[in-house]
Length: 361
View 1 (cartoon, rainbow, N blue to C red):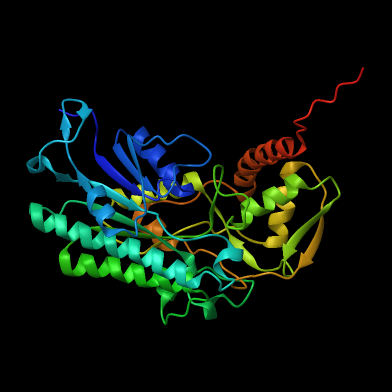
View 2 (view 1 turned 90 degrees about the horizontal axis):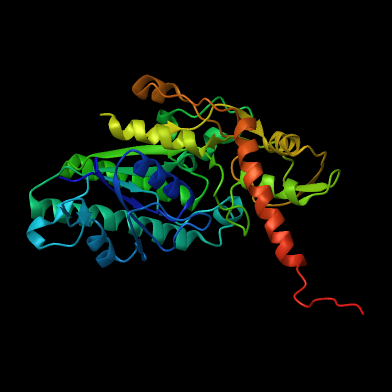
């Protein structure tokens, strides 16, 4: 008899949200296999097993979705007759990044090809093993994005909150959003035609510690925390556009809780997983400066902006799952800033380190 409650497979386990989900599942008593191109950058993975590989490779996906059993309390590979399917799969793997990566137009083909290939590989392989084993128990979570909502519904800064029904008529403002919309329909089609249990969450700007914070793919909360951490008191902080574009941001722990509730429920989704605390990017900068104890001067420059206004409407998730966010944006930014400011200090120490001792006689 295994010591583990259930088995789970996490695609994208080396990434920000995926690595946090691995920690949560392990804390709940799951046996977890993580798969990604790389292991988590900022902490040791807590997965029982971690496979590094490219999920656009169908053969790799086929191998990853096979669970080959326990012997007593110890996991080991056994004969093919003991091959089983996972209880749950969490699909976070995708080509993604902040506005500078998604909205530049320079990465569109890679974003669409790689992300769609991973989703197609997963569903094709899961159907194949289900047919082979005459089972259909594996519940699959797909992480969609608020970027799939139509641009025409996000033209004003005073966005009333996007409802799930606002998805159509379709019209995302980026190829990233179009791929997310396509993949939502793909997962629902496999549920409808092949009975594969799926759950779909539309994430609204998830942020927190241990996420990408520099290099061009970071999201705006991390970028703002980094810019404020790097600035001297009273110094300039660059903001793309006029800074009046609006967004809402959800702390990663709350995202994980909502996702777990969705997976434990009978509700397929798609459902918004976000906060309704909408702020301007200028206000986001002010919040980061406040928790840092600094004053800043905002310097507005040109850059990719995305939609003018985006906010989450949480009526459906409150109704179906009884979930609502509890953390204010300032509380989440305080936690995130504390982590990023340490990273900035570490980076500055490396840059300022002189490898040649200065001896004076």
